[in-house]
Length: 341
Image 1 (tube, rainbow, N blue to C red):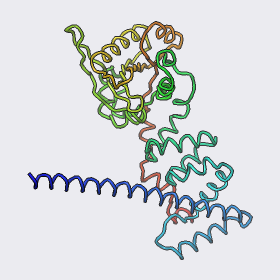
Image 2 (cartoon, one colour):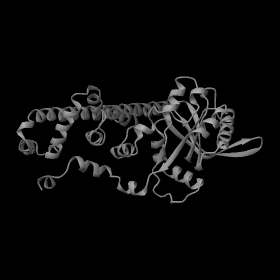
Image 3 (cartoon, rainbow, N blue to C red):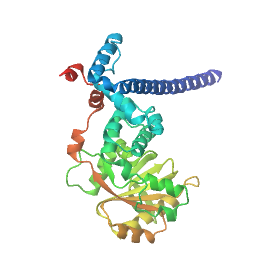
């Protein structure tokens, strides 16, 4: 008995140490990144202040740094020019400057190159930290204009009427319109079951697009009502909203009867699956097309919170053109031969 207790205590000690090691590693990496960004900002400031010295100064500085620190990468002519740009564009915006220290250099360069608006830059920086996006996921989100799709614009839902604040605001911010899914193996003409299968097969990408907080429960999720089986296309649980989210997929235009069917599913989930600790279940109908007025009239008559969004499949040519993590690192640290040519 004592040996078993000792073994149990020992395993717990090991787990505690492992947890602390992971925390320390994360803190070390975070601190190292901040120090690197601070260094690049400092170098950028010095170079910017000597702009009148011309490009020859940057070339000479790059060569000097490579001689002094031959094992340290990041002081190519291209990257020093990036540091200058980094300082020039962020020095007047303290909020963006602070946020930039929380994300890697490659993320910063991607955001600065593709986005000019200060508020939008800040939003993508904060979302990168919040969601842990890799640089290639960040590129997809920028290219598909996530800032607008998940922004504060009015969306097609009845959340304000059916949910109390701040739950209604959080649910509204959770909804995107349109959703853009990366499903490269989905054939050009598909039926709803094939779309569902593709989303499940690439569930990691699906969860990234749905947003932080979604946890996958199952697809074709069976609920039995009055001895009859019904199957929900996709069932999720949202950790921030603390509620189930029912998703129904429609490859055509939204129809009023879809709201009635979703209302039925939500009632069933609330009565069969939901516990007292869970908030009211939310429904999300994803359609290929929708008419705003038709959606509005349909949601006026239902008792449960439902949102309606359109969806798109990321075109294959965009998927094939997306850079890998290695490609984007090369974008920041191009080799010397290319720079000198």
